[in-house]
Image (cartoon, rainbow, N blue to C red; front, side, top):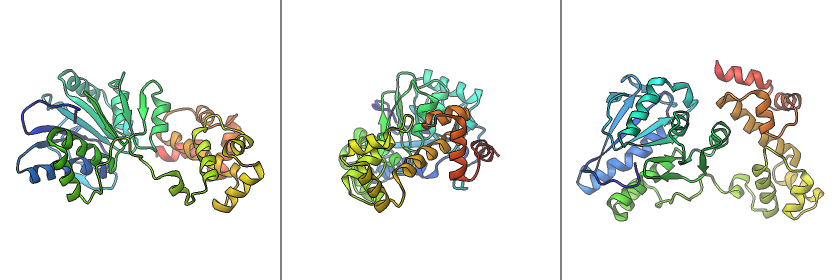
Length: 323
């Protein structure tokens, strides 16, 4: 799904399905193309499914899909989307990296659905590129690949790389491609067929607004939580958060207890621990490095807080995720 396409129709799109891929992201990308073909009365798009060995692939929801070809073929594809889900780098291999590089050298635009960007980054195919991922995976990606530019947009479409946040964002990316190739009217018609309320732009938010997530429109509380989310690695003193939010420390305490049923300190620590849990299960960073990245001053204080919240040590949590 490259930015511009001047080849003949139908435009061919490849999808590499890796074990535990996101079924929703994959179908959200394909269905708009299928419907565009039906509404237009032409075969505007065709798609080919690949797996590492040509065998069926099981998605994260337990459903299994047949594929058309094994990787290593399809070097004349205009574009290929890597579809993955949990622990994407577990499926990285020398053969996969070699195939992706050969596709790139042949002029294929490479992209990632959901966590597919981890594969492209690990294959060193994102130098100088900008990428987006699911909001939950972005902090992990940024820790793992700090030199690669990331955004929290719904999707990114460039000349040779494309990416989306997964889920329904894959539909938004496909609709944007349809609009660019074949006109906004067709994209709108496809969107309506999908009961998709509107054509969302790449800059639409991935997540609900913070006020919606918190279940409150109290401006000062929302600002305080936003400050906490922006300062996980180097936590701000609660007095600073209160001052920047326009309340006293005592008022901040009351706001959190009234609306969220926890103290500001507890909420802040829970945010940092949830980030630590993701880093433990999705990266190979050391426990000490993860503690530092989540604002803890020592491995012992991190381990104590983690065990108190999750009922197991950071090492035990990693071992459980690996088993």
